[in-house]
Length: 344
Image (tube, rainbow, N blue to C red; front, side, top):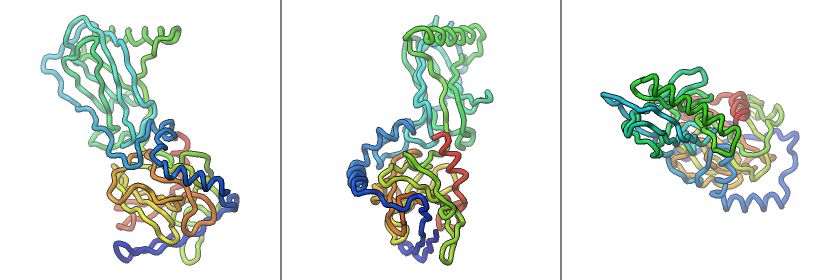
């Protein structure tokens, strides 16, 4: 797929998808259904929720701000601590996503004011983020929200993470009491209807861009496949017309419009990455406009076959820094798509 850019609004583009297994267009019933879905694109929040931890309308703003890191108390203290409740949601999160990991917890203590630290710990035991919480009272709910950023503001790596609550002063009696209460609560939850403590969650930096059945088609839809006078610059992902499309990485919309061969398409400048991502042949114009904030996993449109396409599919491109037609170049997205597909 090739686009040449001679000015702010001038582009030429060419693509013919290899649709070996997808030679028939959607039936008129499916097209009608797709039109209904397009008119109600905001309602995709419910469908996206299971895959991305909850979805706002397509025009949603930036994620909620993370909790302040805080500062340690100069003379920290804590009583004999117990963890009375702990709930982490969503259990699967995405960096700059629709919802970011949040821990809601309540402690019990033998004293009124308790100075705590809450660590975000990766699967190897390394602490990637610390929150300091001062003068926390017993039996009063508190919460922290993490934005998925590690040291230097960089996105944390894909993987499993856990919130860990500790006394700031490192007092071993308070720490052991807290850990014992966690073990006891887990045993009770396994043998009764008591809600379990949930401290763990998974975090990922990219989401798979199709929320529905799909496949990667034949060789003609691969990156680098031959075209008349050029080579294919993306990967075709075959899916029914009307299947929801999600932002693989949140950021800002760099371009949203229509072109004769690309059809309805959208380009997103990724947050915290040099990658730009492009989504082509959308069934209807995306409700997102240039400059709009978009989150990882947010609904952005529907699979279609607009433009120069012979079947319903998403043509997906990844461009390196500094970005799409800004000096970057397209790379083969298939290995990344397959990786995202495994966990999304």
